[in-house]
Length: 386
Image (cartoon, rainbow, N blue to C red; front, side):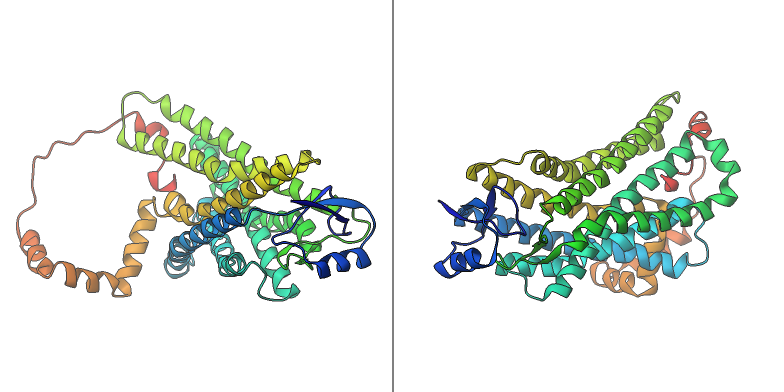
């Protein structure tokens, strides 16, 4: 369905998407309050809108349920056991990444409410605050992933240089984290400037100003693409170089194979959850004339890919923090201090104490053959750092 209407100043495009059928009162309101550039009003497929809503709510709930505890564990282990000993750049970046991802995930309850109700539940101030937190922490999370890849690149490819600069690297990492926060805020300014509750769709989204002509919206999309492309290229270059160095080692080493698999997983998952959203934004930025069918398809693609991008936040603790030996030990220590491990084990394995004491009383085994990869020690750093 299409109808001719007056173009509102906040959406200077050829097509205007409504999440519901416009009534006569809405048409009268548009004609009396906005400028006279005609556009085509596209009415969405209600069944497709319902499918999008169900998909978004499902993804948001999964990301929230898995991501909040995971990132909270990382933050808790840092604050409780490493508060005075952030020993390397990776520690600083992982700590900041966990905070950034947690803040981003905390915006999901309002996003979920908006998806279910079809309208923003609170006012403009909360809309702008929620949107700002989402934008800033999205950019900072992506940039911190790039910083982590650079640190690992220095650790493996330029091991001697990194060892020489180690005393000053901690200071550099803190300065880098501050720069990431500043850059993220600057990249999010276009969205913060023109975000509010839309007067027609009643959603928290871009609402331009008179004379804008879509420039701010274009800047916002360019910032999102830059915020993806820079970390993506950085990660591809750094992890490719790391993989090349590790594959030059002679023989097979379990640690080397584990590290290579982890590198492949990092790149694949990053591209899987972030690349589709960047592609959709690029299409919307460079194609200005749409048919209603194309607009409906791109609307669906943007909602789906934006929802999937949140999944990255619940995977980061597993891929970057908890995969390390020190982090796992700190998490186990934290759970033990909280009494969680004893409570669970006492229910699942009542005889654990007896079996453990019997095992400890038996003599340790001797003459166990051990194998070493001599070449691996020359090129592989501590696996916990990777």
